[in-house]
Image (cartoon, rainbow, N blue to C red; front, side, top):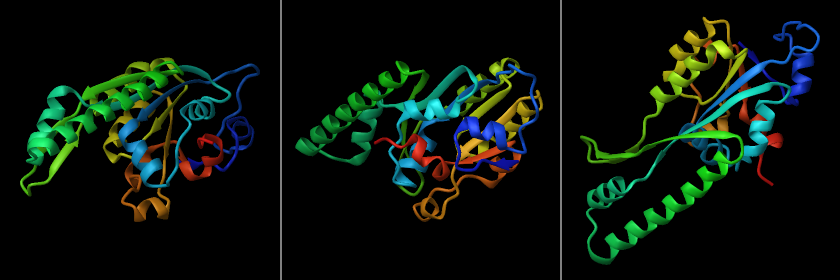
Length: 226
């Protein structure tokens, strides 16, 4: 596993010792897979970074032929909103205020996902699940690991490189499976101490099985929203 320095994709292809010589005119075929929930925590919450997703895709696919870019995320539906409000135990005006807040959030989320869909990403969504654990805490989750894994494996034979934007260690076996097909796998995430203090740190297991690790903080200037 190698680590990319603070350079553009084109500069990296020319200078990285992990890059093998290629025939003249060779263009890598790449697919990008963004774990939306994980990436949001790494960037917005972990590094106080607001990402320009158009710039992100341009950087990740720079110098390559982009096969497809996926963005995976959970989405509120009516059932999830009602379940969440019910579990909160609110009543009267507070309950209705919270429902309207979640509906407004859903509208904002849908505008964002529509933007992604019109700017190079194939958006994959699943309704969030809302539940209370044994300790009484309310959880909101949407697990799209299977969808992401199927897409990575399905495109493996059409790619020279795949970029996984996530720090989730559960993807380590998937990365090994894709790599076994001759595909170079790049992981994009962070282990920066600032993010760690805020509760986020990419899995060592995932990073260790990847061919290359791109630190988000080192490409910040290329992907930050201005």
